[in-house]
Length: 243
Image 1: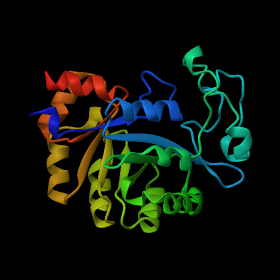
Image 2: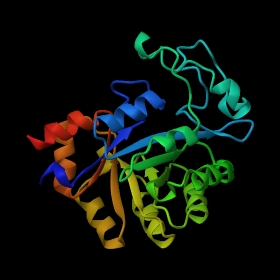
Image 3: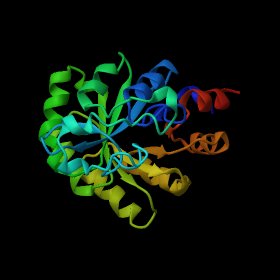
Image 4: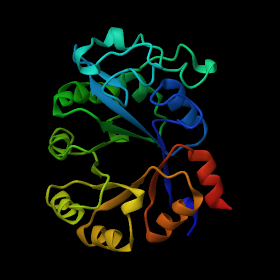
């Protein structure tokens, strides 16, 4: 099967090359031809939606700032340097607001928003998405079962996917996902096999895969019928599969 059928989702932006979950990473992903970009969000103490993967700023600030995201106001969080840990080239890159990330999304492209906290983020997220004018270009994912179901209620016209890392309980979750109107499941690539894909097809669910940087694994998934693959290297992986 050709890579042309695949949607390559840039994991936290073009995070192999640029600091994850930053405007630099997101914009580079678009420049590299990513079909979609995935970012992570939390709710700050002053009810703003900020783009960061961890509960604290410690890792991406190289330990220079250790704020708990949920307990810190957005003006403080968005002043933290989260670029220098990657390279001096990106020193000064800051934690962005989700509004800023949505603004970058080109026509015809998709933003995948992973909700890392709980449903408490939804009122602020709904406002940001509504005001962006790009609602139809956004999909949502979450490891939180209750969170993704609440997200589907808040965004009934948008695709929502349940994230899962392990195969235990997957069959049951897939049945419930279909029953609750979710678009599909977004799975650790290691737990995807022919049986999983067939079950999804039977239930009318999409299967998305994360995080794949090996061409051989991307080809395996493509041959199984997986058409949306999250990767740290969107342009490179797409090129490898096209060979």
